[in-house]
Image 1: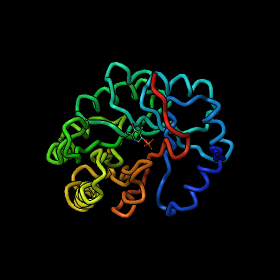
Image 2 (image 1 turned 90 degrees about the vertical axis):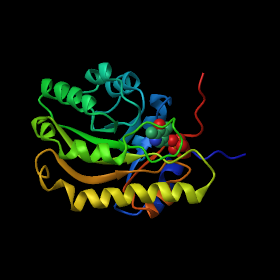
Image 3 (image 1 turned 45 degrees about the horizontal axis):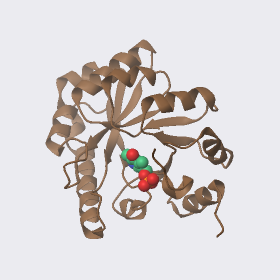
Image 4 (image 1 turned 120 degrees about the vertical axis):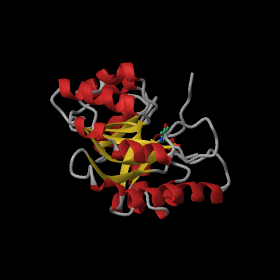
Length: 230
Ligand SMILES: *Cc1c(COP(=O)(O)O)cnc(C)c1O
């Protein structure tokens, strides 16, 4: 059986993504050599779901890589990535925003964040209900967090084969995203939130996600192969 190399798979995916869609190559659990293969094929945006693993890879790999944290955040570990992280996808509490702001300030940076919305019907997924997201975006306190910038939303659909359900979940997030962009941000817009990114879609559902309005997809196994957890 012929196994396609990473560069070939990456290029196949890139060739079908519309120009407005950013590809995050999800390299969690994969070795630095695999990341370098994608890097040498032109990829610069990589996603990891463990802060310490990402920090080690950051140390070892070229410094023009943009590192995205896509996993659930442990607040006490934010400090390990504050110096370099490019975008944090999975922010799901105000407390976490406060901690990201605190650590970003130490490095004199502004860290871009996405608020993670809970759109899946399953209870296992992390994320905030839409109401809570609106509350955060409209809160007076957000304006005081000068070292973070909320640049969009992230969501994960249910783990199911039911494409209609996945599509409905993606559509609900896109509708909410569009509504926020036009209505609720009047107060804070231009301060530290400017919604432009909608991160949804993984290997199994990214084309559907793009059809539903996604402009950032997080693709791991279709580029790097299956992950083997020990
Ligand atoms: C692992 C992961 C992905 C990538 O999943 P694949 O199915 O391998 O493409 C995307 N998003 C998040 C949040 C992940 O944890």
